[in-house]
Structures are given as C-alpha cells and as structure tokens.
Length: 454
Image (cartoon, rainbow, N blue to C red; front, side):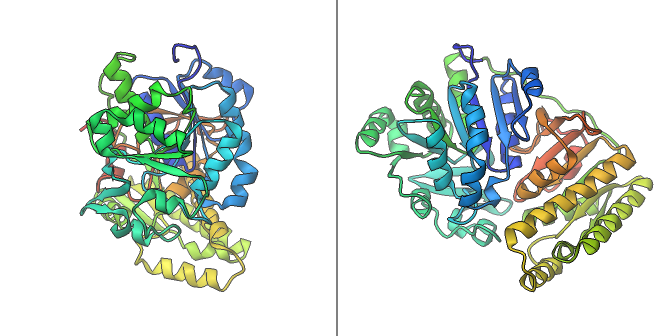
C-alpha cells in the first residue's frame, strides 16, 4: 500500500495479456498485485483488501467506441472507488488501436468522466520489452530487429489495427479531439520535464505523451508522474508506466529491490491454445512441434457456420488433443500457423460470405479455443496451460471461469506464468497469457519447464 493506506495503483486493461503484464511488473518488484477478470464480488475483493495494486482485464481492444461507452464506466468506477493513487488505463505497447477498434482516444474521454485529471500522461514504450519511444515515434523489436511501428513487419500488417503512423499523437488524433503535447527525450534527460508539464497543462494539453528509451528517461518518467500524482490522477499506457514507477520507487528507497523470482518447476505435459496469426507465434509453433508438442489444427472457418458445425469442430479438436496427451505429448491447438496459413484465407472467405462481422467472428474463435482448453484440462487433469493471442486470452480465460490471477514465475516481460483463482475446477491452475508477437521461440517449452529467469 502507498503511505496513505490505499492502493498505489488500479488498472483497467484493454486486453488480458497486457493486463497480466502490469500485474507481473508489480509482483516481481515485491508488491502485492492481483488481476480480476471482471468487477469482483465483494467476497473476492475482500480476499485482496491489502493489495498494493488491483486490476481488471477486459477485451476492450477488440471492440468499438459504442461498446466502450456501454462497458467501460462500471469497472472504471469500481477501480476509482478503491482510492488508488493513480488509475491506469492499460493499452498495448504497440498502440494497437483505430477509430473503430480499441479506440484509445475514446477510452481516455470515458475515463476522464470517471476520474478527473488535469492531464493524462501517455506512457507507451517499455524498453524491457524492446518498445522504445523517441521524439514521439514508437519503435518495437521482434526476432529480426527493431522497427519503426509503421514499418514493422507485424504491426504494419496487423489484421485489425494495421499501423501506418509511428507518431503516436498523430495516430491518436484520429480517435479524439482532446489537445495533446509531447515531453521528449531532451526534456527528460535535461531535468526540464516538470517545467514542460506545467507549460503543456497551462496551454490546455489534456494528453501528454512521454518518450521512454532507456534507464535515465524511464526514471524521469516515473519521477514526473509519481511526484505529480495529485494532478495526474489518470494515466494511459503500457506496462511501461509500471516499469517507470517501480524504477522511481526503488531509486528513492520507497520500495526495496526484490530478490529474483524463481521457476515454478518443470512438468511433463502442458496444454496450450493459440488464436494468433503472428509470424512470431508461427515460429514458436514450429519449435514446439519439434520439441514434444503435438500440434492440433482448429478450423477457424467453423465459427461462421451453423452451431452444429462449430460444436463438431470443438469436439473433434478436443478429442485429438486428449488422444495426443494420452501418448505423453504436450498439446498446442492452433487456429493458424502464421498469416500465410491457408486457414486464414479460408476463414476470410467464409466470413465474407456470411452476415457476421470480424469482431464477432474473432470473439467466437477465442471462445471456441477456450472451450477446447476447458474440456482438455478437465478430462486430462493437466494443471498448466498457455493461451497465445491477446484477444484469444480474454475470451479463453472467461471460458475457463478464471476470476483472478497472481504472478507466479517470470518468463519474457509481459508473459509470466500465473496462478488462477476460481470457484470452478480450474482453481490453482497455472497459466501463461502471451500476446501473438511476444516471446522467445521456445516459449511454450519454457512454460513447460516452469518459467523462471534465464
């Protein structure tokens, strides 16, 4: 808890993987953090009354502004009522958004109706995850190197929110009319960030984007936000916000540097599902196929057919997975193995011939894969799992009936192994949620080995 006896932070995540990433940054820094899958019941909330930080995960990134208007106010109000020093609307570190899907601008407008704030700091970069912001432009690293976002091999061709602009405030201007400003690297390095903040607020800026490249700028970002938390009560950004705050708290001695987290220990088999079409995930699937995993294909086109077709595909994939588990293999059920998988084209063809929109069809894929995982875990008795894909993670977690998560063991930043809280059969399940473009090639094997530092 902060010195006031109230939580330091409360966060609302626009997808499940990103929400879990915030939790792990705080937990592995020695703070007590919990992530809820929805507004918790009073009884569940009481179990975590001593938490330093509380979060609620959502699928907002895959929805439009109308959904946000209807669904954001209630959880944001619950989080605001905790009295947290800072309320954080968590976005992806690759700024996945557009006017029609995951609209960050509209989310800020709604959040400001719940919690007044003189200005809203925008902290998107997270150097620990190879996400860098320099003079307003965002860069992201993948296996092949670091790319400006509008030239990024994955994000520039994202199926829902392709990024054609790396200047984040220009991109955001398509989503909101709120005035904005930038506090750049020169200001952060020179110690003039507070003066620039004062000037920006005086000039009417409501959204203030902050560069973040390395330790010095990250520390300056954390210091600026925490020392001005009485007027920067609402923040938007990736887990880079928490990395910056933790660095500042450790620098000032407000929290001690925590000992390194440990592995959760190896198990013989795990169950995994993937709804990602990312080339990065395709490489992870290929590694898994060569290292003790049976790859089970799921036909995504089945979600746009009639109900009996979808039920038959869920049953078929579940049977195939259980048969593979009986032979001693771990299993990975996939809806695609990269963007060029013929199933992607088949899904698009089926979707175009139906009356279903992409958002609804994408949700059906996530829910269907979640149901496969639910059946496989129930019938096999396996107690460790992975969900790959940001949207898939949200729908899959809800299919499992998971109510809360706590970080258990680290892997790459943003994809820790966590322990589950549930009133159903998956209480105590260990699970990792991974964004499509995240993770090492051997990520699924790493989870099978229990995660832990390398």
